Image (tube, rainbow, N blue to C red; front, side, top):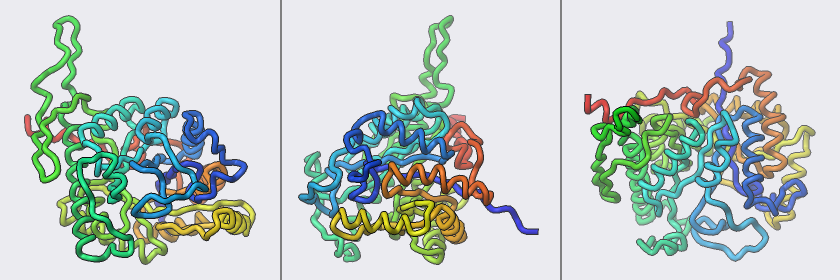
Length: 403
């Protein structure tokens, strides 16, 4: 008797008009609306219609660039964006089930601010918040803040000892950033607010805790000003392409997004993350590993490839990505996801090449195909993002020490 397939988790990564640089030039793209609340509300509503676990919202601290390390002078691609956390807070109350996970650049953002912002997002979404933690090594972004200088480096030099040391330092800082954020979320016990009009007691001051974090990068006393979020700990996620960021996922995250190009690579990456989890003392914790894919999705065989070629011609060059690029039908994509999942991935974060075309193709084409195969939910089974991901609400670390 064959065992029933394990359902997959599915998220979608939202960025401007889509992940292909010429996406904004498509008739379906709505380029004039990219900086409106209505545009983002429509996207997340569509994702929720497809019963997706969550959306991520891209962000950055400098204009988008076709270069990994510096600004470019291009005028033919989308430049400019809204703040991801604020978009998330605007959208969250207008949805009911889907998780909302904005990107946060830890390198130049204080963990106290981020802790309070994501806790607030968890309140306005009734327990559906997360964050995607990102680092920045770009000199131009550091110059916006004027607090530090970062060494110049070319992407080609990534494997040199000097660059590896600088990158390791940025990711160590990100791990400390997440640790501070998590401690601040726990700095109020769940029942710290009494709110008893009769006795005039609103708060139990003994249930607020200093976190007293002292590290190389941060010194944070606490407590937070925002009570413990509804989920206790909102979801922390990170994109990772190599050992140093895999270590961040293993130490600090609930979900890592990775970019394998085949099942063997997926298996090797998952094994490396699991080994790093063990080293970090987190072997017993559930850390989801999601595969990232850029998708061009069309019902007609050959149509997605033709669309990709047409967009490449508009852009003046072939589109490349850190992630595998898929062009094909919903059925072919379902085959690929099932195959990659055999490498140990528990879900996928899909990057729609043209959001106006490929997001509805995910919700209206891929999702029904996965449902037919028993690989995806047919209804939302939980009210919180932790619940959708099969993660229990964690105990508060400070009330445990109190007891």
